[in-house]
Image (cartoon, rainbow, N blue to C red; front, side):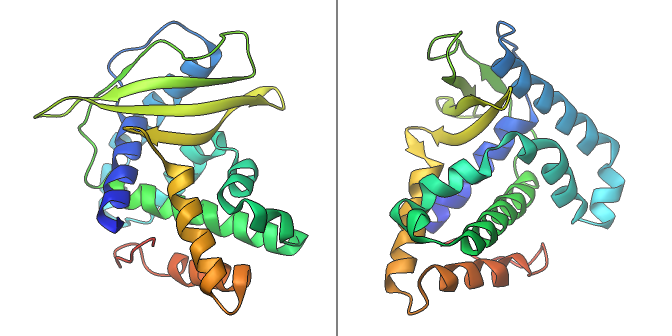
Length: 212
């Protein structure tokens, strides 16, 4: 499960980095396409800086990719009933650490997934709706492409990603299962989970640790 989740996150990052086909210019598709081009351009331009200071990847992912994610909404889905039980401070601290977790995981996975190409497919959902899915396929050197779907909703006049589904596996559902199990078994409940995430997120970029 741990290795599968890391691979899955690595593929997510690859799908954000390189795009070879741009579909019809729906605003949600344009967002995916523009973000793809920008992060790729920045990484190439700062290759020497990143090699000297790997933490620069954190900054690029945080600045360019993750602002297009609805982390408050994702946090609510990930924690489910535990989100509803949490107080305001716990919600804020969890959302901050959940975001940091993805920044770090993305940055780490970037090192291994910079050359994969992605094809953007037709939208799933009503083009004039407020909730839809941008479908993509990541090409593989051997074997069939890996389907990656970005679930997005229109909120505060912009499109935001709230889940990513890789080969029928939901990122949010994977974390939901893991996090809620930990909250249930931890003597400190949600505070115990937040503390573990804080500890993990404070480690150096090159220090591996499972997200599970």
